[in-house]
Image 1 (tube, rainbow, N blue to C red):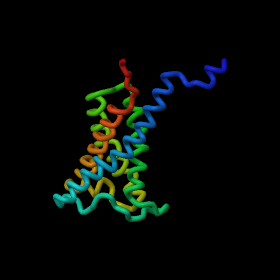
Image 2 (spheres, rainbow, N blue to C red; image 1 turned 60 degrees about the vertical axis):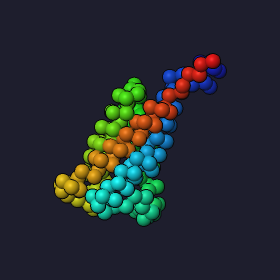
Image 3 (cartoon, one colour; image 1 turned 135 degrees about the horizontal axis):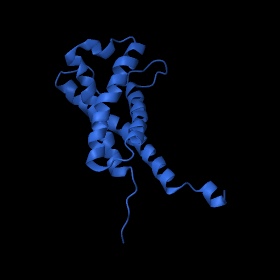
Length: 158
């Protein structure tokens, strides 16, 4: 393997690297803008008692809830980006929105909630159950938009 091959990533690998990094950033920022925006709207409508941008410390690390959620939004953004690397435009945004509504919600209901001593699937109370898919779909929408706009380098025409 020559110097150039060993020290310069292929365009495909470089593109994939950019794609997943943008997936993390888009997922992180989407929590702050779209996810918490949806929480704020639902809170203002008295649909959820949870206020957005909580600074309450999490267990066991004691970081603010918003920081934890944003970090995990970034991790989910990487998974979303890897899953939909072949999509772009409206197809990507729609797929990301559906992904957000389903996968993070199911994990939160059936894995995270029991680990935190909370009822599975929001106690199967329909009003409480609808919050997860709504705020997570908003997150997916924002992450999909971020990937669609910034995930791939744009060709500059002279």
